[in-house]
Image (cartoon, rainbow, N blue to C red; front, side):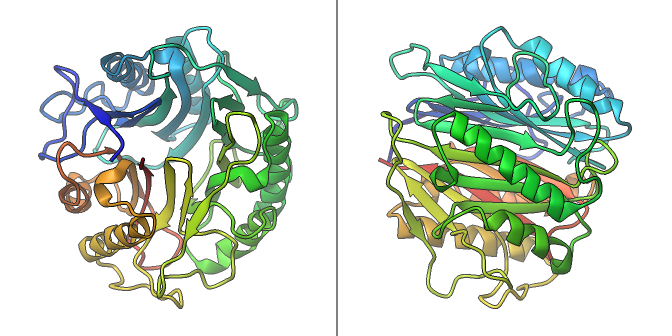
Length: 408
């Protein structure tokens, strides 16, 4: 197993129940941290409903984790901000608070995912992400690319960034630089336009769609297959088969009326900039989508393994144990273990877990699936994020879990 270090800074916040997960994990030059929130060491929410104050605290917790792992905020390459949306100005407040915590180094990319609630009542922001620092302690050179036809981000945030072998494209939406929305209300039209823009950003950084290892789609819909199929097929048409690992999550809204999708992509290249060889896994008898898509359940590129959102479904796309969160969680984790086995890896190779589960601001609902996920790993376990969703892609689907693993 690749050598790794874990981080739990002294006095850091904690969950109300004991889990195997740690706040941060470093493996080689890659540093992952789970969703950081404004809780105290006893698991109580601080600064209730105060977006700016909670964001400032979360960024301070991120700084402490990075310092504990011999890095700092200038090494950040990617942030994902899940937050409770009450008005359009929330997105601007969140961006301002995040950017003010960062220095002048170019990057990171960022995705904003507005939601009606987070895991605990009065918690209004949760921030997870990735940083990179060379094993000898030196900075890894980075290059950024920004798109002129979309929302301008406050410095030093970027639309896309290349650092070493990794290429990150942050959450792209149809909000344009002049404040208007392209293809307002049109999920399929926006999906195509965003994929075109992502293609340009990848090209600017020397990559292409066939270098993608992971795509995440957050789309405005209500949790039925009919609502996601058209946009899913539109995005999938940009990839040759075998395509990247994929996760698709419906959300009730984005941060402006008329926005219908936020798309993010991770790609990998060789150090010399040429395309990197990869392997994929699709275990026999594994679940499948009801329409054909080029995505694969697992992609291995170099030492990185990306596994798309795993769910409790059968090969015909029928939900197993409908409405049962705990049993679906066990099935999703078992599916992850099966995919990892195809690469010669195990669950303890996982460095980052993100779980999207059906629920609201309820500690009980979080703890029901968190305890199952936590028990799947040997302590000290991976960094972890758990996000409640009003619904998932299919009716009676209760949880979707994606992971990143690293192997020698």
